[in-house]
Image 1 (cartoon, rainbow, N blue to C red):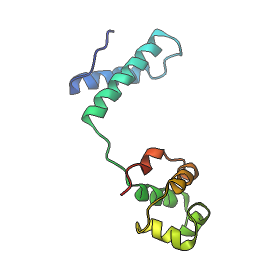
Image 2 (cartoon, rainbow, N blue to C red):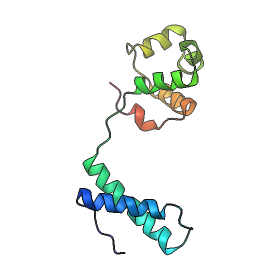
Image 3 (cartoon, rainbow, N blue to C red):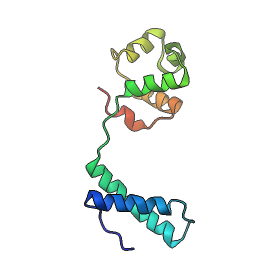
Image 4 (cartoon, rainbow, N blue to C red):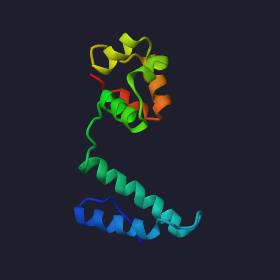
Length: 118
């Protein structure tokens, strides 16, 4: 099939359906190539029509802490003293670049999470 830029919801729906059919295509086949093209077209359409909300770094950190069963004291080796951890988690202190790098690695979260902190 000759795919073009997806411009409508109906075209998006058809492309997603076809991508699901091709999802387990063997590597280096025509179907695999078609899947690759479809995924690019679908992502382009979704980026334009369904923008993702910006994530707040503190919310992500707190969510990851809860998910992992961590307490504030568990972040002391990453952020610093008990007071520093408390100030960061309460939003009274900015996350520094060094902290962001350590938190990114510790929680395995994308660096982009830290780019829009307020």
